[in-house]
Image (cartoon, rainbow, N blue to C red; front, side, top):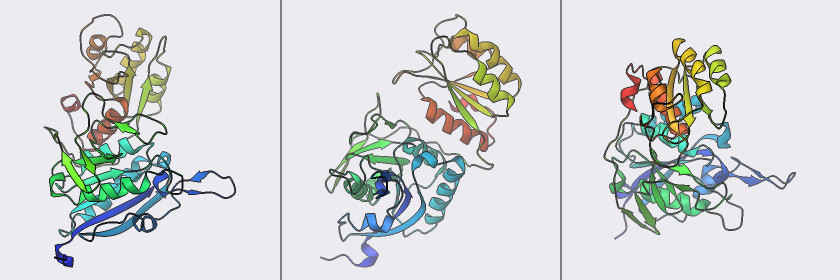
Amino acid sequence: MELTSNQKKRVVMISTGGTIASKVNPETGLLTAGLMTGEELSEMCDLPESIKLDVISVFQIPSNRMTFNDLVVLKDKIEEIFTDKTVDGIVVTHGTDTLEETSYFLDLTIKDSRPVVVTGSQRGPTVLGTDAFVNLRQSILLAANEAAKDFGTLVLFNERIFSARYVTKQHASNLDGFTSFGFGYLGIVDQDTVRFYQKPLKRETFEVTTQLPEVEIVKCSLGSSGHFIKHAADIGIKGIIIEAAGRGHAPPAIMDSVKYAIEKGVQIVLTTSAEEGEVKVVYDFPGSAYDQQNAGVILGKDYDSKKARIKLAVLLASAKEDISSYF
């Protein structure tokens, strides 16, 4: 039996640009991200008749140009779309460079239970062996699926479904570009079939009430100084993410600057550069997680530095007082 229009699943695709929307620039022979419209992309996905797709272009940019202001614009557009109860889900097409950050921001700020799926491609739509159309098609199928509700924001890449909280870009160019170290993927989309194997136990959202503040990442390595931390505090940065080794061990030379920044009211969160495991108080030597915690640094547990940056910015913009309790 043929589905009538009111029986169809309705998905809205939001195009923001990126490699998935790129075309070759004839002057350079290189790809220019964001030139292909969402309408052009969607027309090549061979969607089943059971899905009605609407397309909106919000940005047409490479994702290295995404800013905190752009994140809020995107969030507001999604919330506006979800005021229409006939919409079953939303797909956001995005460049892969900052896809993990945008998806986690949406995960933290979109309260609606309906699916938001973020996807992109490692190869442009006109490049041999492109993954653009299969990723987009499977993301639309996922967004239309009832089982995808109440997961928060999802990322679909290379047939795999990831939680926005733990997804990370693992390869600069390979089609298998994303993974979740230590946690794995939540499920798969195999051609037209959606299968989930696991579901996150916890979902948290926050209401952003002020402009997202500047939060920066300072990565530590052997012999690092605290110059960048002190400079960040002096120019008014509101939050700093320290990425240190192992359990959160930083060179002791940074500690004077850490204490200086905290005295100036800067929120500092400590993360680990390791792909798995978490920051934890185990040792008591200078520069350890213990030493930093005693100075007022928040221990970021298993957050990577980019996800911790997004969360700290959201918490500050949500006027949360006890920041440490959310990490």
